[in-house]
Amino acid sequence: MRNRLVTLLIAGLAFAGSAVAASAPSAAWSNAGQMILVTVPDWNTIEGTLHAYQRDHGGAWHEVGAARPVVIGKSGAAWGIGLNPAQHDGPQKREGDGRSPAGVFRIGTAFGYAAHADTALPYLALTATDWCMDVSGTPLYNRIADTAKVGAAALKGASEPMRRDLHFHGDQAYRLGFVIEHNPDGVPNGGSCIFAHLWSSPTTGTTGCTAMTPDSMQHLLAWLKPEEHPVFVLLPQDEYARLRHAWQLPDLEAGR
Image (cartoon, rainbow, N blue to C red; front, top):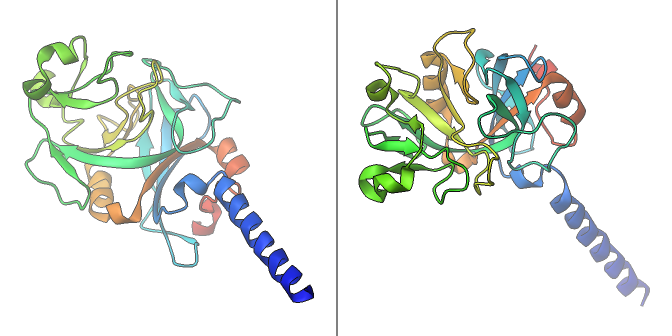
């Protein structure tokens, strides 16, 4: 009887441990083997720093390559809708606010103007009829769609053509980039069309995306692997310090 009680106790402790692990804030990205971490000085600053990390089999994060400069939304950052538990202390991302979503997000499809790109991620070769739907409340809100396939009426009012070079005098912003999966369920007014893409300058903010040099983008796309379930993290420095342990984020100081 005593041995049976001990066995039951051990089994109960194991179950409790599994339940705690499943409810941990970082459980939603516990399978991530790659992480892009962007930090900014505060909620209202547009210049940030990007670090890339690979997780080893023991669960430790190791930095890959050098830190790289980025710019974010022209109005700064705000809490987005992603994998992390909702945060209420700070600005909240809204459609058209010019802020980049903060939090933890899956990395989705890569895209670009060329027919192919050097990446293992799924790749979308953009055409003149591809748009990202930024009209809240519509069926395709926060989705990239082709008017040649869904019809012009389905994307009526959209202001985000993906072939910006053809619509905006040769704009190269989306020549190469990838989707940051903010607001994947299309919550109305939650914000849409959030990407990592090429910057126009190191001091020019975006409408809500994270932008960088072509060299930085090419390095990231060549490194990212879908089987590693990569995630993108953006946080102001104070929020990073507050959440690092709970969210099992890499130690920025370790690479310095």
